[in-house]
Length: 170
Image 1 (cartoon, helix red, strand yellow):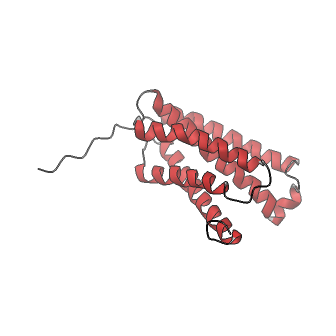
Image 2 (cartoon, rainbow, N blue to C red):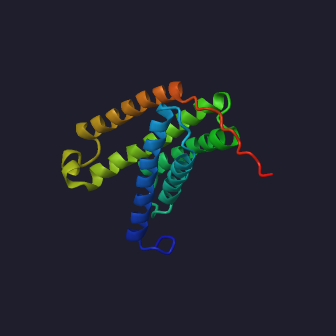
Image 3 (cartoon, rainbow, N blue to C red):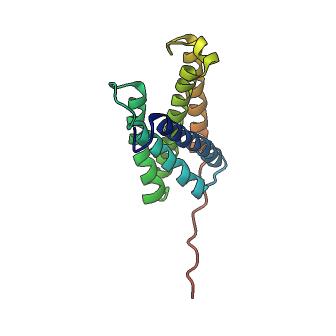
């Protein structure tokens, strides 16, 4: 039992949160490439990405694993992402900080998705049963290159128009 759920139910919840984080993160990244803030989807992305890492720590502990390390690193990069977006309103260097840390957090989620896919999808598992074979390494290298390139262009293109506060009621 984890948080009152069977391990299977908790795993399903964790995976669902992760997939929502990845899907919303992709939309946010595409928005960055078009200089769009996408406020609601950004909040969904940041919260579900944080929850992905946090819920990952509730699984039975059997020593430090790559998943735990990625979860810790994800939490570390999410702090400046939240601060840049919500405390500093993307002003000055906080705009680039937000883009870079958000892209890194999304990359971490996709990194884990690829690793879990190779572990649990039979057709992929056959190609890389230990996770150290060339197909796994190639998939992760492509993942890294794609996010590095998209992150570079997102930093260059994400200059959203300033948010104008709504007029107050008379």
